Amino acid sequence: MIQSAFYDGEGMSRVYENEKWMVGLKNWKPANDRTGIDCLERHNETDESFILLKGACTLVYAEETGSGLELGAVRMEPFTLYTVPARIWHNTITERDTKLALIEDASTGMDNSDIRTLTREEIKSIQGMLD
Image 1: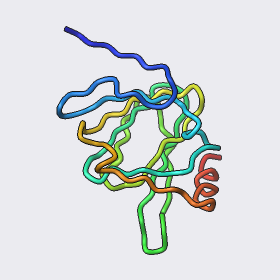
Image 2: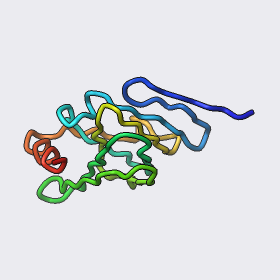
Image 3: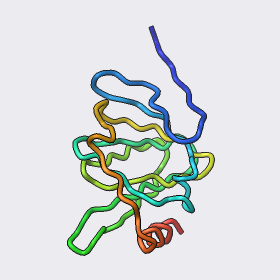
Image 4: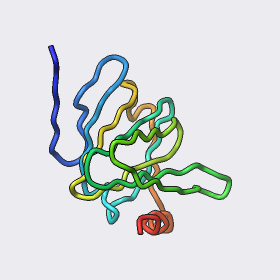
């Protein structure tokens, strides 16, 4: 039987999952707004892919260097697949009408992921990339 899923709430919902992979739908939430961004996450064992379905999204990423984080940003284009490799810090910055699809390994979770709080300087640097 064909399954379908829809999610219209704030943030992300895992709308389909099997033993191998998971599909989520992600909408705007305050923590993903340009004024609310305060952290990056990384998945230590698995990649994560995003597709912008509606609205606007900037995929922020960072690699650790000896002198701190080397930050970058990609303004996502609709219906284009963006994949963040395992161990790369990242987050999505969205506007209120944004809808994303995300695909990742079903085993991805907080037991194999990390959250890194951003400094004020890092937040300002990210916000500067959005202009």
